Amino acid sequence: MTPVQNDEPIDQPVDQKFLPAVSVIIPIYNGEADLLICSTAFGHRLIRLVKLNIC
Amino acid sequence: MLNCLWAQTYPVSQVEYLLVDNGSGDRTPDLLQAAVKTSGDRGIILKHLSETQIQSSYAARNTGIRAAKSKILAFTDADCRPHSDWLINLVQPFTDPEVGLVAGEIAALPGDTLLEQFADRQDTLSQKHTLSHSFLPYGQTANLAIRQQALEKAGLFRPYLTTGGDADMCWRIQQQGNWKLAFVEQAVVQHRHRATVSELRRQWHRYGRSNRYLHELHGVSLMREPTSQDYLYRWSRWLLKEMPVAAIKIVNRKASLVDLISTPIGLICWQARSQGQREAKLPDQARQIEWLHQNQFESPVEAPD
Image (cartoon, rainbow over all chains, first blue to last red; front, side, top):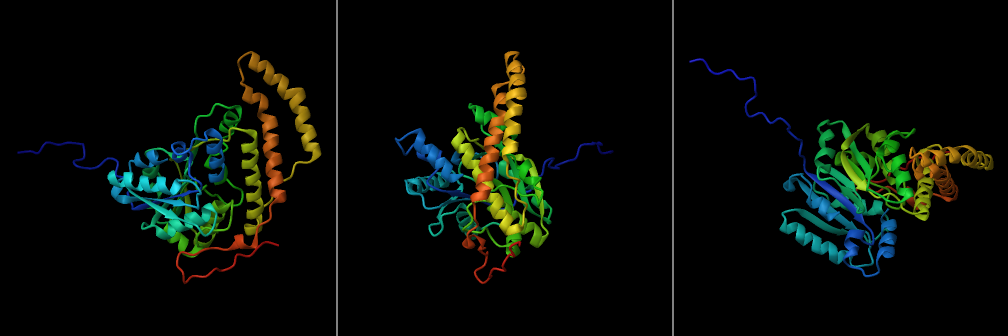
């Protein structure tokens, strides 16, 4: 019996990504706006000052 | 930012997030602790570290590097918004063993003000400017990954430097270890542009300080300072030629207000950068380099004459 010919690869991942172990490092100073928005009642000005410090 | 980390498509078993608090005086430590727990509930490793000795983002990054368990170190900032496929795209060039550094792209968050639109048009934040630096290419730490092995010889960030540390680090790695720097345009983090003139001035003043520091550390050329003739020529040209042309185009809806203000804003940036460069002086302490291993010691970097 002749096997069926098929041009498509079998069980070959098309998009094999490289996935090494990674450490993501993020410095924070005085907090970030997202964190502070829920913690402060002083509003926009304080958040803007904090953002400047981070940059 | 936390939502962006949680949304990463990278396998959670292969990544740890190290958030290094650099002496925040508010409730940030408490909020970070809560984030650690929430992340844990999602199966994501997120650690809260502290750097309390030195007030500098580079010192905080060094604290993170020392605590890291992986051989690939990725950096971004707390005010950035990484796309969900940021990390998976950023690490791909490390399949090449000669690549020691990978920079991703920094795109602007949508902004409404004229200044934000101006900066967007100039691609102020894009890595394309730093990657084409006339001295050597470098990537900004807002979107950068480093192979830990590359730090063995080059050392860590200079912890007392307040700006320019990303260029300094990338250059030391390229010069001392012959590592390649790769760029991945698809590895995107978003960052907001400066929305007010004072913020914009502060940003360009810092670029100027960075120029001075990198000049003293690496001999990079200083930028030319604008003269009174430069100002006279630019302002005259703007008033007599550019502004009328832009105004007509705006009336005909062929240009926007950003076209009208480009020259004045450009001059403000140039002036602020020039002032920053002129006023800055590199403190001796800022020359110090920290090392990955405690038994290493600094080989002094020669300052240019």
